[in-house]
Image 1 (cartoon, rainbow, N blue to C red):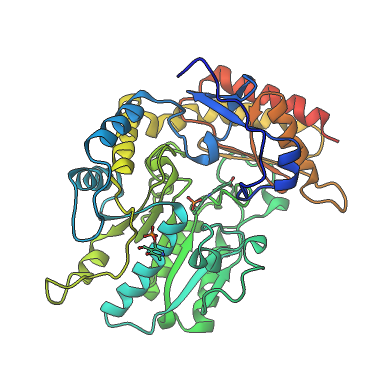
Image 2: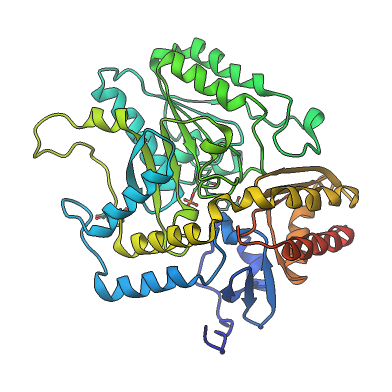
Length: 442
Ligand code: PXG
Ligand code: PLP
């Protein structure tokens, strides 16, 4: 890292920032100029503890040498190779390494550039699979209220966050939504997986009855809903979904963009909950967030159903200019090496109980109405200011940043997902900072 930090720019007009309160930001900018391990450094040279792994993606922390070296070497050796009809060695090596990490039977990987692209790719694989399998009438897609599946049209159609949908017209046809799994009255302040509510999965049976199951292509859920404020599935819920999908020949997609790559203390959420989906969407932790990349994991039977017809013809009419981009592959391989060398994919399991205790200690802070945790994920839900939802949450975010901690907020819920390299002293520092923040927000 160079000693000199890049100065803050003084003209902020042109950049229309994503998912940002642009006018507020430009009056009071927050900018990072550097990052190493557990900390960011702002353009003023102030250290900020990373409580969120960037945006849930820098699972190995920042500035990790194996990743940096892999990218530098790759840029000099092979910068880009066409993604269609031509390959390069690292894409194949990476795909093999990934399927070795995946649940048994998920033997193939399709590369994308983000979680949103992984989701739209998985929906297309599901639809095409039924077509090539002689069940072309299966066209309906089922998501869930409060689900987040990225921002592309497929993802917002199956997604269940109203703010991400309401401006964008009718989206995809033939989509329905299951109810969400959040039961604060029964489950508030549960440590880990909540007991109440697993039977809400049976609502899927009602949806099947309504539309006739033979019209349904796929069901997509996040094993743990992250973006919507950390909703942990009640005991038995995912098992029930799996059973209903099996009964009706419906493809079950787990969106593992957040839960993949060690967040819960196992390779994937599927491993943690002991339920194997048919397709699994990933991104984020795949490259430690360093270079954009996503991957869809596919069960052998689904992949093999495509491998028909004349061999010179394309089997799946889908792909991105940057699918399996060499730089992204190098970053991913450096990331997997880092995870393996440091045992990071299971480290959340070692830290989870200390994390849980420290988090739930904040129960007595003002305005706290729920605390939730699983693996190295935490959420603190605050009561909204009357008539001004999201205000208290936003104030907490700004205060925490000023006090040296990076947190995420969804409306009035604080979400935490620190790098998996976190030590106990960092957990103490983060919770200490949050206690001060919560005592100060009005
Ligand atoms: N699926 C899931 C489950 C996600 O969490 C996406 C898809 C989309 O990934 P891309 O790479 O297209 O952003 C996500 C992304 C937050 C937050 O603070 C969450 C995400 C992204 C940014 C912020 O909750 N999740
Ligand atoms: N728009 C145009 C005009 C294009 O030519 C392409 C790709 O060739 C795309 C969009 C899609 O870009 P990407 O493959 O990076 O998703």
